[in-house]
Image 1 (spheres, rainbow, N blue to C red):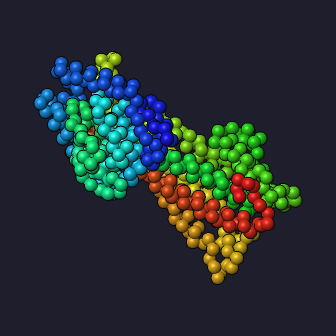
Image 2: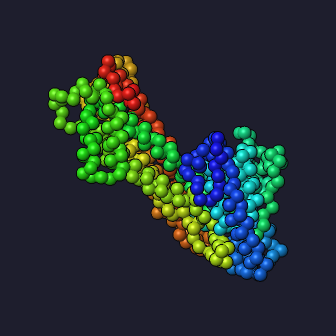
Image 3: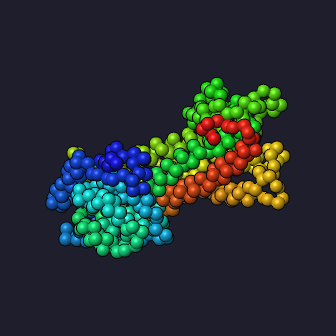
Length: 463
């Protein structure tokens, strides 16, 4: 299997998912090593000249006006990691932690953070050895980065805190020694470089997004199976329709639906002489509704593809320009808003899926046995499966409430606007899980409905 190359510029969302699942190895690019070395050399030159640098020769946040002596700079970085490892809640899944580690390594590899290559080399070594820091699920407002989650990762790199290896929780120092790795001794700027970024938010977001893409594709299949079970018509999916309103998601969905149903015997059985003029919206408007979600996911994907190859540190180091700039790349608003959009899109498609389930189960609407059971009354069929779908849809609608508008100032009002990015990412993760189950319930119910149309068969892709 080809290695995923960490160079700060070419990481894909598929790469992130593959490394998160442990199916591809990771390698640090030589050019990234050189970029980090240049950045570090510039920081060292500034330290030697006595320059004031935020988070290197000063305190943090509201304490930025406190000056730190050269003798205290290494201690400052250790103290930063220890004090900021203050998350709460159940640990994130190992796959999420692996994505966090990869994304942080990739951000540092760009050479704008002033850390030594050894820092990223140890991150990658831990990935390769399956050493996964325990990272609590809560503890970030998505501004000044995901400080607490990333601090828990950094804590493991210095041999403190706890990690999970092969499913067993153990002290980080013990795990590093067993793998033949030496804990990191942080130098000036490196603690800050490790914890100041959007990688926890982005890691959850990328993995949720990849699942959402697949679930939406499955929703197309579910909808077509429902159409077949209900003897609906695909005429509304014709390309001429979507050429008159050429939103990309709508056109793509319409074309996909037409291709998937091509060759269906069920469709041909009622092509002519059907007294119905048009189907209900849940069937007829799939290109418009599923397509709108595709447009939304297209935007979300664009945001995430940029973010996984971005520097989200502060301050930023520009050795070629001989500048260290305090700025706001750590602010996760763009990711937070995008993940809120993902939740909204899934909630809407979840709603149309549930309405198709109702249509399948309701004999007055489907012409099929109640709840798709051959013995209604003696058996309840899909009755409670629909109840489960409705429960999950209600949860999806709650999760569609945006986190990105709920800023609460922190750090003595120095950080007076925050993104709530990690909350948006947790919502997205939960929303995808709920949506996947709703779609699965529709697939099951629709497949049962198609069985009532035997001996006719649907198209080859749907069968």
